[in-house]
Length: 186
Length: 279
Image 1 (tube, rainbow over the protein chains, first blue to last red):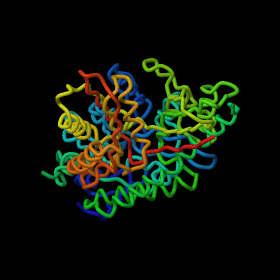
Image 2: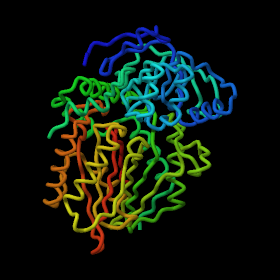
Image 3: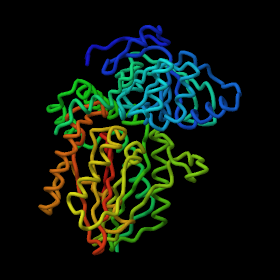
Image 4: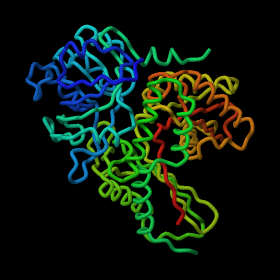
């Protein structure tokens, strides 16, 4: 595991993203799209019905977050990752649309890990519960779709030096499995 | 008879809810610092650094500790020599709504579990009221996030399963859900009571100052054994592998039926929040 961060500018060059391995510390700069439970549900039900969706997911990096409201003069409030597992049922469908990265916390399902290998995508773990720290890395935010969902709307975020660790890579690596195994006793 | 107005309660609840969301409990802060001295994994050290920095930023009042500013769980110990003028429940809910607006807290409550319309002000609070001796009111506000709450569990064990049964289900809870619940965790365990009361024992255990053992020696031993066993799982900070999976284990026990051994495990994340006031 390397402690030296890799700086990635998003949307990233495919080669840079796809070479990432679990345990690699990264700093992300550029554009993220937010989406959590309700937005995932809507995107997938539109796609399954053959309807157009209101955002372009090709090459996108999704951040599973529902920020707290912004104080005046700030782009967002506290904005840490939510549990990724809740997005698992919808994720293979979105990876098929070209999503290249996801940021959340906690382990993913087998199906998601398989879809990450099939489509070439990376899962980043951001420090869960560090919403104040992560909010400071968000320099701009705007609602892109589903404004009626409030904090669950899809936002476009511009981030600078957003800290994360590669927790799932396209080679089948899963840090939530191998990390604890390294430190388990007995 | 001492009179306390509902406005005093509203103001106090608003202050506690806001403060709990911006200022980490001192004992949790200390436990995170102590965890850093024994964490061996690079990812774990990175996460602990981030959490301590997060706490420092939140304390300045710019952003709450976490975007999940929680369900407001409010414990009230009401002295029997106190007369409240006005509606206690209404006052608590108005206090939560005021903190939500004033503190820029996220509205995280829906009115119906299936229809899921947001109430937009974090009401209603979950309120636990106890009648106690004296002329004071003690209020404790615990904003409880869903990440750790969702990984909490309840069992009705056979009495014969005893200590080993309790250890088995606690470790199973941590193995299945520990990494999603924002470790290092505060683990609250309820033993005994009934199906309805055992989760409340577990929640009350989360209010205890960290690493203050239960007064009963057999429960203190079980707390200590469970803490070691949980940390031996290797889940680590953020679930990415490491030595520190739990900061503390606290057990609250109560009498129960001869045929029952209820066990509840309520997980608290590393931003285990709570503030109290005595009126």
